[in-house]
Amino acid sequence: MSVADGTVIGGFTDHHVHLQLVDPAHLSSGLLGRVLDLGSAPAAVAALAAEPPGGVAISFAGAFLTPVGGYPSDRSWAPEGSFRKIADADAAEAAVAEMKAAGASVIKVASNSTAGPVFGDDLLQAIVRIADRHGLPVVAHAEGPGEAQRMPRLGVRALAHTPFTERLSDAEVSAQAGRIAWISTLAIHEGETRAIAVDNLRRFHAHGGTVRYGTDLGNGDQPVGLNPAEIEALREAGVRGAALIRALVPVAATAERRFLLPARDADPFDLEPVPHPHGATRLHGRGHASGSTRPAHLVSPESVISPESAR
Image (cartoon, rainbow, N blue to C red; front, side):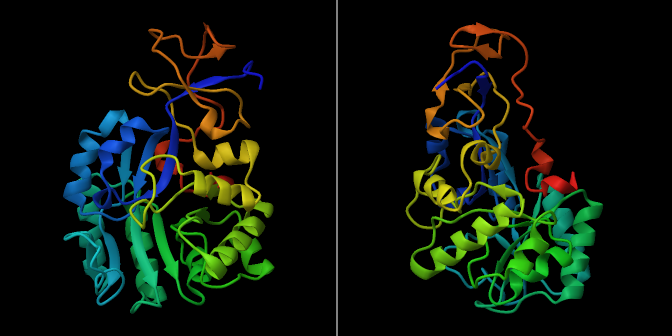
């Protein structure tokens, strides 16, 4: 494979992790350069973000915002402090302000009708408006019939999971493309549920929808790092080559994390460690450096979950 257009990057982005459910120290030995935690106690994840293992950047939502009695408030795996029960707009205002003060860059809402109540349209729209005033896009766990379809019209910017409850119609998929990003999390599923998710994502990608690599790390037995099963599932859904690299959202190289990406359509597992050359960051071939670390398709941390056509 030619490396003439090789770029030094800091690794890739996993857009859906739960760092309280894994040993985050293992991140330092992998190919990730950034993770987005979508549901942890805000104080705990903020402490991790302040001293990230191996220089892996950590962005986070803080606690899930969920209706009273809603998912995941009844789940044994949910750490203490990892959700806030929202009864009304005043509670939403307080919770969003709390997450912002903790350092959150997104807000996570739960909308899982298979496991309890979900927000009505008015309250969910109020949460989106409040979050928008704080400069925070909203990511939703949408599960249950019709839940994924609600999210774009209510202003949610990303789905935390590719829709997996039901096969969306082509019209529904087309309506989502360009309005909302989907975080993949395909490999957590098996059987019919996996087939539904892969089919939905294949058509969403074909319609030009924004796909983001994410694993739901902490859900089941997964590697703490780039997940081969998720990469393979994305390829099965037609997200390959340069599109796969875009979904992985490479981050800028740092002194601690430097890898050569041989080409924009390279296999992501072909990254090679690169020693720090004291400011020389763009490589032509294997050893001649000049220019910038930042590939043209890199996006800023605050916009990695936003639909590309909305920027």
